[in-house]
Image (cartoon, rainbow, N blue to C red; front, side, top):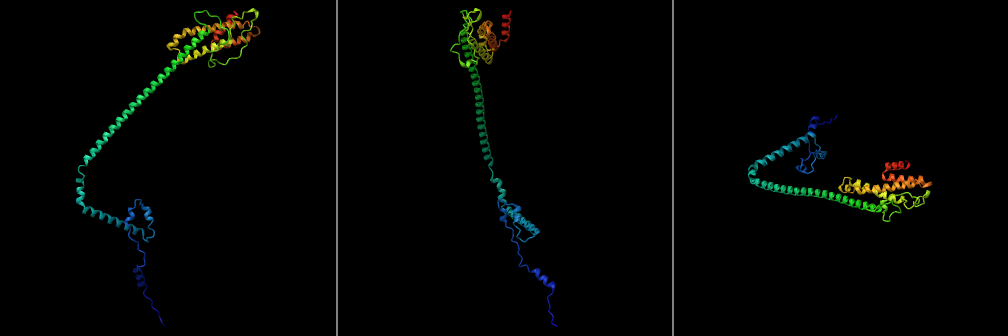
Length: 296
């Protein structure tokens, strides 16, 4: 019987282990890979998946590379040791340059502070000027209001005939110079020149429309005085004149109230109209007193 002989199994396995010519050995790690500006360790390690290398082998290779670089750095320092020692003496005189920079910086700082002081001084000056402008504008407005007050007082004195000439209760229609802006809207009145019953004279009838215009102007004076300030010296000096105007208007109101009491069928209507003028003037108490005196 023919027998076939195979080689020893242990010997064959040993031969296979020694034959490593077909294995893909990884190339050494490149130094250029670590010099990239955007080098990232995680990204670099993830790019080594095709090296067919265990993690421990990779660690060992990195350690070897680190040791190699350390030796090269040490050799470089040893070779250029004298140059490193002379580096300090080569920088001799740098203190002067630093001092020049420091002096220049101090000068620049002083210039900046000087400019800042000028700006702050100018700012304060502008604030003072603005305050002065505001004060002058306020005084100008007050002066204009005082002139307006004086003109209106004089106008009312003329219309009410206050002066050396004895005055009578004012009648007739409003002066054409009255400004619509000075007058409040008034209810239409029946003609004040109707003949009164009981033979009363019509020559001294008081026009309620004209009287209302005078009251509106007087009320405007009081409001203007409050806006300016009743304690203003000029307004204090005008109080006697305004008191005469008030007395003249109240006299006309009293006369109108007496005439309304003789108006026959229109007595109540005219009396209410006169009382409304009292209220417009703010003289409700005076109106009550006038009514009581009429009934007495």
